[in-house]
Length: 151
Figure (cartoon, rainbow, N blue to C red):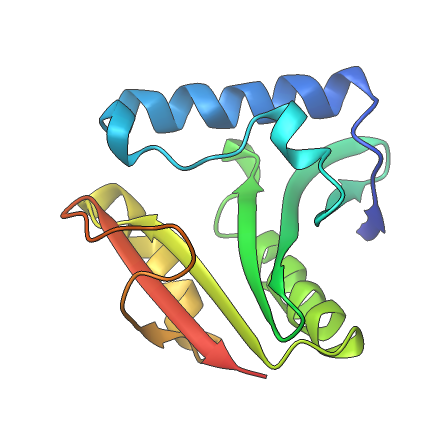
């Protein structure tokens, strides 16, 4: 597998991210859906990576700069057929290393609180993320789980 920065111009990325946003909309109420669409991921404070196995897109993730020392993990997604196959762990290892390499001291995330998101929360816990209060522009939400870790 190969993890590389992606400029979000390919049709496979657009379709992959649209599936992600649609899935999040089907699970979370509109006020609790925080998945970024393609335009939001193209903002200058966001860096985006794609995971490919050969020419097949199997995962993605992004880092959003909140300030000079704090970044947010965004758009973590694994292709449904590749879930629980190590793609997310490989990508998360990469993103944590990227965040460290550019000088961030803290990495935080928001994910769902519903049972659907339990595997994601377990993955983040395995990587040292712990529950935290809402950060950045987030507000308390019973549908959201907030996590953070020092780098």
